[in-house]
Image (cartoon, rainbow, N blue to C red; front, side, top):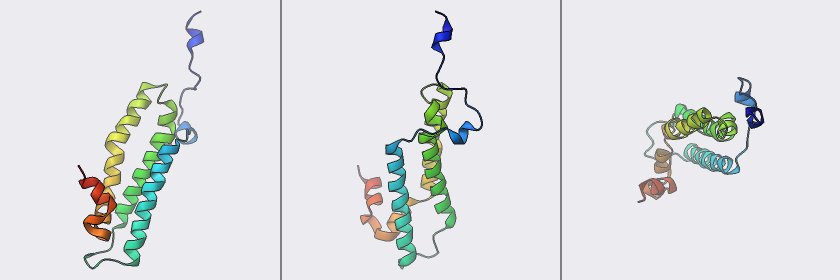
Length: 133
């Protein structure tokens, strides 16, 4: 038997596949819901009862970059890169680079640690997590 029997079951990716191919990953979705929910709840608390140390309102660009980071995380872990990660080494590499280099920068640009510190000081869960050994 020749190479004909070794064909991949996935078709060659197209531009449309960037948005139409999905493989839901429950752990990734739960992580995004937890992080996004915590950030949104913290923003709600910040706007409802701003601390005295808050000199200026929370910048909208922080919230937008954090949201963009969460959206990119969902797409990288559940979208086209996840679908083709086991079939194409290029997709796996792009997925890893995005998860290691781009997503963390976008998430931290949203300053979730500073948001937690504004609300509860050093007692904040996110602050304790970041500063723990």
